[in-house]
Image 1 (cartoon, rainbow, N blue to C red):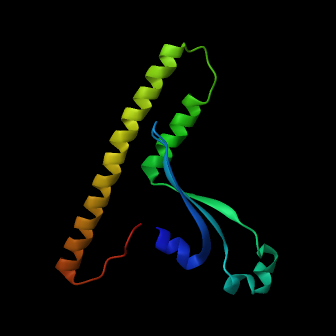
Image 2 (cartoon, helix red, strand yellow):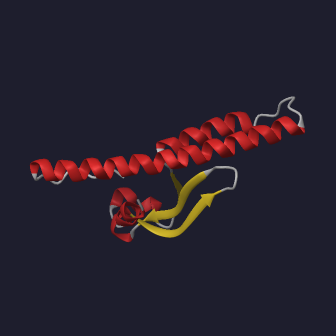
Length: 125
């Protein structure tokens, strides 16, 4: 993914956000490159930086659910919050393994397609 981002933008920093309780994402601090900002319609964005978060679909789903439950103050006891955190962590590990399995499946699929019809299948990142 970094290759795609670098192709289109100037990358200042890559922050790998992997917290112990399960959140995973790559955050890129980027700006438009000078080739792009030399165009009239993009000149106003010269020097502007932004952060882009890159996650898999499963990482995004986990983060959304965790945010909805984990950051909403409730009547939970400290023990209940601790148990919820543990369960989120376990599920994050399971989703991480699922992500790896999907990548493996995609690579096997691309290899098979290339072998079967001699085409160069479209890569999915």
